[in-house]
Image (cartoon, rainbow, N blue to C red; front, side, top):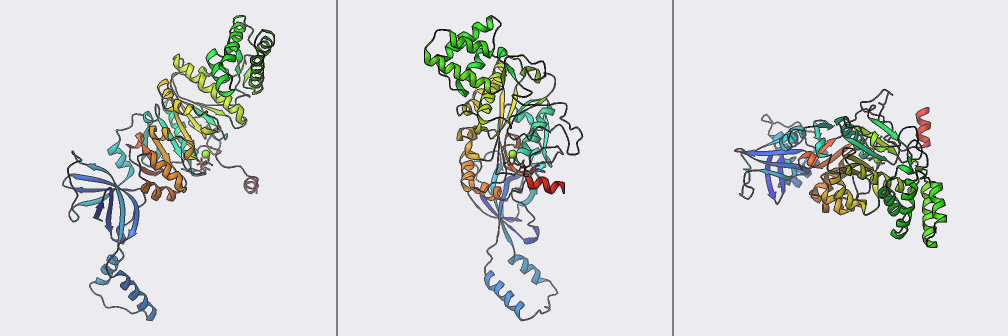
Length: 479
Ligand SMILES: Nc1ncnc2c1ncn2[C@@H]1O[C@H](COP(=O)(O)OP(=O)(O)OP(=O)(O)O)[C@@H](O)[C@H]1O
Ligand SMILES: [Mg+2]
């Protein structure tokens, strides 16, 4: 392959058909006298050789007449044919390896050497050796220290492999020692403790599955005033004036050791206060009780205190299965969880956590988005957001994202949305994303040295339950 033309960051290389064994997203290095340009392949076209049309037409007409054995002892014919059949490989300049990028330099078309670079070698070159490696793909190990403390996005269309990667990442983080919390809206992370054949997996010891309202309930008496205020204000829309009244009663009952829903409601009904405030409080308390997430009793069983789920000496994979909760219960629960996690982190009662949230726009209030990328990160909650609707994540978050994993995508406006907000040009996205097969990902960010890298996500043999449930699917499996 030889460099042919360069215009801006777009480079065209000429390749004879037999050495053009390339895939979209592959990396090439053009080298000359110790200087290097790193290119990424985004397309392949036919070369525009002069007289080509006439040649092809002549070929067609001679085929039509008869097959003639041509006398060609020097095999000139095959050389001419391969020239006529040559390809133009279109690539983008990703990096110019030169001390001073403002020095004008282009490699020679004749003497420079072009070679393909494998992803593993590329990453070795551009990212420092991972301190805590997690394997995501063949030859692709990323440093989870670049995921903890960061904002990571996983986007792509339905069934493209997003949740699969999220599971690989969540398990890797937990095994490396991180506190992982998953908000599981589809109930598909609950069996990560098992392999497909039913045996225990590497995370079985670390996995804890909790179903809010069933095996995870929070005694009202353990709520702090701050957490109660957050849930009441943000999930139930209680005005500040009413909030003050509620906190007064809450504080009083706690002092007397009689903090239950019944006592709180009784107090609201009997203490003198504005009638509209009374009504607002009674309504909210009944609604809160009806979610089943908060109880009067301290449960003997598991799950009544969040801090015990995160031991300081090893990782944890805590999956909150919120698939059976209604939309409203979800909002209440997520508001409680985030508020409680923040409180524990601010009091240094637990180590930082990584929160995996699928389709977060369904249950996360809008103002949280800013919190996620600014305050939360500093408090110690890093987030991995997963969605098949890229425009549900605000532009602000894309621009602040440290890592982005993009799976197959065909919708032009989704790709433009990404191109506007990421450091990847629209031409690259439009060329690579629609051609990614399931499980193939275009990764970008800290984990891959801020270069767009394409790879296939590994299949770690975990029972993932990610499939869409259908009756026909079950019948076919049984037969
Ligand atoms: N790298 C991979 N290796 C093997 N199987 C995979 C891989 N990626 C995805 N799959 C399988 O493909 C199917 C769809 O993947 P997944 O559930 O991750 O898609 P998704 O993008 O999360 O879809 P949705 O938007 O519907 O949630 C699953 O059955 C999953 O196990
Ligand atoms: Mg999914």
